[in-house]
Length: 262
Image (tube, rainbow, N blue to C red):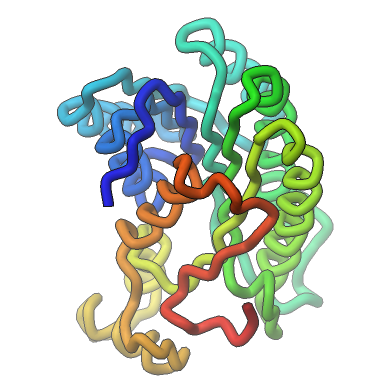
């Protein structure tokens, strides 16, 4: 399906690679004006150049460490000055930090909450007033299936992602009267840079394809395979579009049926 996001300004955090870049490509194809932010300047510029080649509308990129409240505030001010108000906020930045609970320090917990929860809080707090004023807005938060069904050795990520789900519900309730829709996506096993790094650090002699197929079998994914980043991006575009006009306050699983809960 082709989504029409003409004249909408979409901000993608963690937009230089992986799921963020795949979603930015879909936004570009839907004729949105697209802003990507990430920490790495070289990767960010390369992603911007790639997106701009196929774009009918503006593509911009800003370096930003989303764990810094000062950098978030600065980037938001620059985006509003250069391009206007944000219509679509895709909070995608994050990593899969996990360890034995007893080995996690206060610093580990604080770093994960800053990256995943507080970056969502800060960007939403800055973007929502304009969305409310224009009576149109979309906020989409990435979580993972462990937020719904946490297991041993999944902290701090499963906990911070669960907090994001609670934030999603709060913002949906407050944004609803103003036509600001807020949803989250619980991601399962998707081809991404994180998965490629997991393969590289595993010490296995298996190819990447055999490695990921083995993970899909081990995790009992009913579809029997790892998802493609474009498949997740399609769901983000649906939630960003007018087709989702009666969907808010929900967390959609995009996981091939892996998660045992709704």
